[in-house]
Length: 364
Image (cartoon, rainbow, N blue to C red; front, top):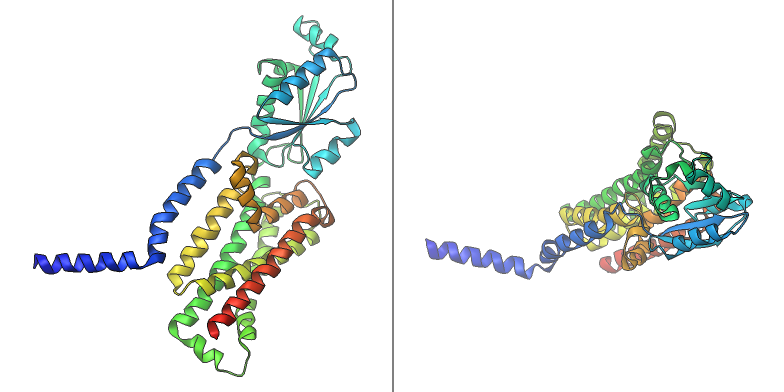
């Protein structure tokens, strides 16, 4: 009895060891999750781009800017004029603009002597990303004047999201995640289920070309995703109060492109996975976790190590979420995020071409 039990355990152990896919999931996924969570979950101020407006570059101004440029958590992007503040913040070139008073040295002395209480430095902050806006502002005050207790010397303006509402930040990220769930996961599981039960072979011997069959299966999910998109936009605007000053048509157009990309990802997963469980695992772990950790949905990309910042460039959700945030919160039109759109279009064409080729190769 004991010998039979031992033989059964040995057989099952050998079976698992020979199943390379299972071993890969069991051994690799925990390591990947630990690394992603360890590096991505960070609330530290890191790599915040800062520009300076200084009508008079006095000794005090130069000393303050020197402290700023030498601090590893901030990147000094140079001096700009007051007319360029809005442009630099909207374009994403900088996250904070430091505006020094015209007679900075004299006014600092007056504040320290108790003669004046007027602020001598104005911080204009891009608050569309609430993850870093508040902490960056507080830390920057300490860097510029040596002590965060001297907050009376500062005046802070939060642009795009003055009330620091978290919904402004999370709605675009949730959109990027939901469409992957609805399109990629459901499409891949649907196609793999057809292969598992054997109905795919029946469909393939019909007069309809295989490519048309695949597109016919993808269209219902595309329609469902469009309905979900409309519902999300309505909830975001009228329930959560998220602005869409960049234009609903632009947000909708970019979202349609992202839906096509997600459907292509689902088709690609279906060519890799042989079972529905495998398709779910690939969709959930290989796609969802990078979206959560590396797309900027929850944590700033700037806080990641350089290696993961480079890896994040291949995550489609990064470009979609960044573009939707700019259009929703900062009020930029679709043409202003053309780079994001071109990248998403290129990814869509490439993934769809690879998916169709792999699908045809399997049929042959």
